[in-house]
Length: 228
Picture 1 (cartoon, rainbow, N blue to C red):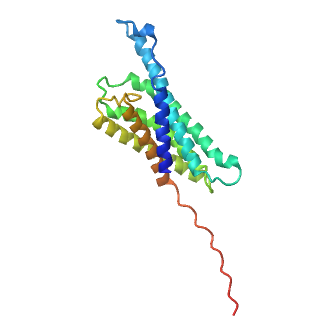
Picture 2 (cartoon, one colour):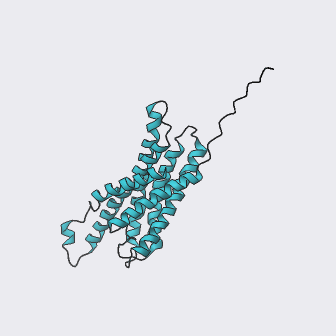
Picture 3 (tube, rainbow, N blue to C red):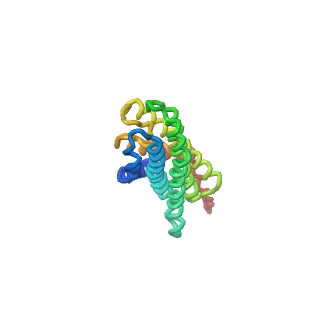
């Protein structure tokens, strides 16, 4: 599962690089030298949309990969592909919804110095936590013995693991890359955006593995009595 999570993290990073900065303020608002109100509003909208695209991709690809990795791959194709599709939808929905929920607030109260890692961790934690929860839910509903308790535990593991990945990203980004604006909604450099994707992907997988109950022991086959 860790290997699959790493692949999903790299894939999300690659797709995110192709769409990074897709939404931008209009030329009209950018050209106003003494009126920054319209520019700030458009920067907030563009930043929210860019974050939604980037983290929707991360949550969707992570949920898809982990859901498929935990699928039984026996029986009907729908049973094998269903967890992956569920993870794709739930993970993407978590990343997108979290972005639209917290990024506007993050822009409103953002520290101009860009050094408030706690505020950044709260914003990123909500987004990535919801994405990890969706991926964990997909894993919990797959496998040979799916059920509500296992789904709840896997979803909780995905949430907690994604939050731990967020902490790793904030510490590494803030201490090792202080000039890369890692406290922004989306980091400024390619390397720190990769760290974000990999940290969340590995953290989510570790959380799911830690909370997943052990597989039930196979039933004992009664031994035939020997005839003297």
